[in-house]
Structure formats: structure tokens, C-alpha cells
Image (tube, rainbow, N blue to C red; front, side, top):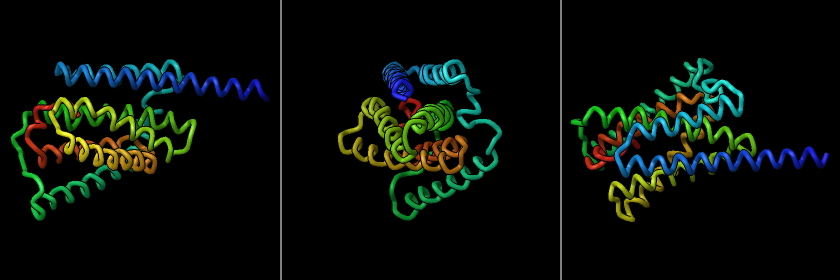
Length: 222
């Protein structure tokens, strides 16, 4: 009995260290990306380690584990579309009725691809698809979601600093992103499909480009 408990505790400890090291690696990748404008580095430096870990350490099918496979695909898409439409309606109301922000449509195509599509896909694979599910193997969803939210927010500090945000702007972004990350974890847990938070995340980034300062169009892929 004791040996089994000790073995299980050691296994959890080693896995926790592996997740922490992987997160530190991704944090370094993000810093290098925003420092030297290496957008492709973020994608490859995040996706490849996750894929290799799931396939060769966990011995699982990556698409199935990350919930990117056909199971719950339709419901995941429907959840995502409905939530994205609701999110879009709120942001449009903020602009047209409450005068918060400006609509800006003339975006460089690569900024749209990087910020809306690639960043949303890569971040959700790492945080919700991988880390959240891994943490849920050792603790409750509520605790796992809080831990992932803290890591998700922390990862964006290099981006905010690179964008030249002041303390107030960083504080506002921190509060917003904390709530948004928690919601992404919740809808992922409810829909059981990673496509739901991916679509919602993409909608957030898309409409943020349309309603926040144009300076973000020149920032990195987040």
C-alpha cells in the first residue's frame, strides 16, 4: 500500500516538473517571438513539444487527447459559433452605443492570420487542450482552471511589455484576460471539444483588432 502511494506521488511530482519545464520553454519561446518578431517560432516551439509528449510519453493519439478529433466536432463548432456571435454582439454594442473604441478594418493580412487564427489555435492547444487536461488528472476542474488561467495570463506579460503598455493598461488587460481564460476553460469542459474555445478565442482576437488601438496590429501573434 505504502509503496504504491509513494510510486504514485513520485509519478505526479515528475509529471508536474515536466509540465513546468514545458511551460518555461513556451514562455521563453514567447519572449523570443516578441523580441525578434519570429512568429513561426511560437507555433513550432509550442505545438511540436505538446505533440511529442502526448504521442511518445503518454502514448496517446494527440488529436484524440487534445479533443480535436471528430468526436463532439459538430457540437463543439455549434458552441463556438453561438458564443462567438454573442461575443461579437457585445463588442459591437460597446462601439456603436457606448462609444468604447473605434472600428478599424484595414488590417495587414498576415496580422489577421497570426493573431486571429494561429495564436488562437496554438494557445488553446497548449493551455486548454494540454495543460488543463493534465492538471485535471491530478485535481478538480475548478482548481485546474485557476492554475491554467494564471499561467495563461503570465505568458502574455512579454507581449504587453513589448507593446509598450503602461501599468494601468497592463492591469486592465490582466483583469480582462483572467476572466476570458476562465471562460475558455469552462466552455471547453462543458463542450468536451477544443474547437469551442478555439473559435471563441479567434472571435475575441478578431473583434479586438477591430475595436482596440491600432498599435496592436503591429504586435506579435497574440
